[in-house]
View 1 (tube, helix red, strand yellow):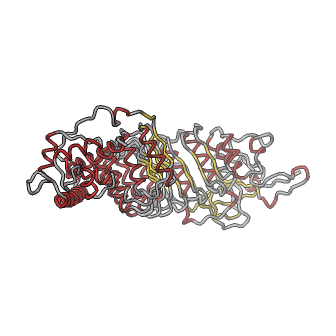
View 2 (cartoon, rainbow, N blue to C red; view 1 turned 45 degrees about the vertical axis):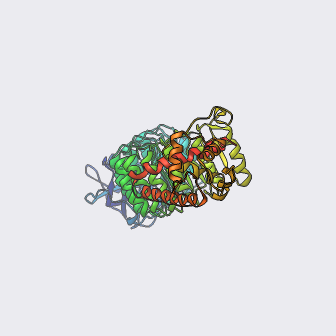
View 3 (spheres, one colour; view 1 turned 60 degrees about the vertical axis):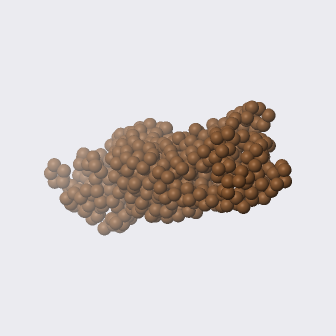
Amino acid sequence: MTSKQNTTVRIVITESERDPHGEALYEHWRVSAGGPIDDSGPRSAKEDTKQPLGTSVDTMRSRTVPDTTGSTIIDSRVDGTSLKNTEIRRDTLRPVEKISQGQAEVTFTDPDQISNTDDDSSYNNERVTSPSAVSDSGSDIDDVRGNAEAVMYLKACALYRVTPSYHFRQCVSDLDVSMQHRTLGDVGIKAIATALVSNLSVRCLNLSCTGMTLAGLRYILDMLWVNTSIRDLNLSHNEIGPDGAVDLRDSLIHNRNLIALDITALGLRDDASGYLAEILTENTVLKAFHIGKNSLGEKAGEMFKTALGENTTLRFLDVSWNHFRQRSAIDFCCGLEANTGLDTLNLSWNGLGLEGCHELGKALKVNQALTDLDLSSNRINFDAFKLVMRGLRKNKHIETLKVGCNPLTTDAAVSILRAVGDGHCEALRNLDLTDVTVDTDFLTLLGNVKQRRTLNVKHGITLRHDELRKGHMAVILDTDDPLTILFECVKTKNLRLIDLLKNLDKDNSETLSREELHRGLEEIDIPLSQRSMDILMNKLDINRDGQVDFSELQTRYKEHLRRIARLQRDADVDLRNYKNFDRIESLREMVRLRLSFSK
């Protein structure tokens, strides 16, 4: 038999903390011995000894007392436990609301007066009966008495009158606890938060899709002020609302434990972007940050521009399914230009468009950290993609590029393969072109590239474009810039100017006539209209003798190179100048494609 005796002690509440709903979360206690209990009137200690454990008056709560009086302990409001009487420094607790100091006297079972016998050898001196708990024997607590964390959780559920989660009870001591898609509600979240206050086992906590609202978020954040073991927290797909950003900011700018946080689809709006940016600026521990599927837009771009430039510790950032468009897209990509730590960025489903791609291309030229970039579903057409390619050609660190589900054509797919084949994009190993149609020429080019380097490509369906091949009716090209077409042919075929002259000079006169130029271009499937031929001869025939010699070719070629460099420089300075550069780039790309089809 176990001899149970009660001892009357005096509890002095020196400080208390309350949540926004008035519930006491954590309390500091100072314990002193002796003194009568005063509920409705004085009662003697002798009368108190007749009260069994847990049946004191309503204003009293039975608790386990530390053996040493005068200790300061933290109590989580769960009847009959003091978190193993662990001493907690007061400066680790979050001050929420101070209340006036007061005193309360409670009847306890003195652990020193409990003697174990063979009939009751399994009695745990932390075991108590809360007001709504089950019976001492055959209860859930009996089943998990050897697991202190599970006992704590069950007692919390009893106190808050919530049905315990069997799954959480089973895994509360594991490293990874996932409650995803389990409807808990705020009260269920509160019980879990209470149980995790002193938990040193859980490293990864997943509360995605649990029915949490703002109140539940605050319970979790309050728990994080004390818990030092949780490293990865997933709060995604809950109805937190825009007000939750303030609480997240207040907690995370001081948190030095979390390294991964997922707040995807919490209903955050653009006004919350400033608080999220503060987290990136002030927190120096966070490595992975998921903030996708919210409503971040114009203000977010401006805020993240500064935050990304200052943050050097974040490695993974997911901002997919937001509204980074136009001005906000430009600002966000400007931040990437100054960032030195981020290696994985998910920008999919935003809508970068032409403006954002222009700035992204500039950022990729100088960014030395990014290795994985996702631009899927961003309304990037061929013109916008060419702007990104200008940065990728200079970048030596991007290993994975995802540009699928964009309105790209085979031309865009071929252009990136040509860049890889020409020795650009040195680090690129994985290319995702999901839903981008390709043709057999793309597959041939891909095979040639794979012979020289490792490249994994995922693409859409393969189409035939036999109508573009030589032997079918040629499409006459009418352009105001035939000079660019001529010199792009020279560059694509890797010819010298003297080689061009010799190949087209059929009469060995060391000059080219109009007919020789026209016939030579037709043979390589670049037929020019009569108007374009007139413009070409007018440009090349400097001395107006009707013939084009080597010196005239050389002079115009140098002028052409200087013109291309000037247009590219102007486009980098001001996006309004891009149209001129884009026009000539489109023409050059058309020549490269037609020459590839004519082989």
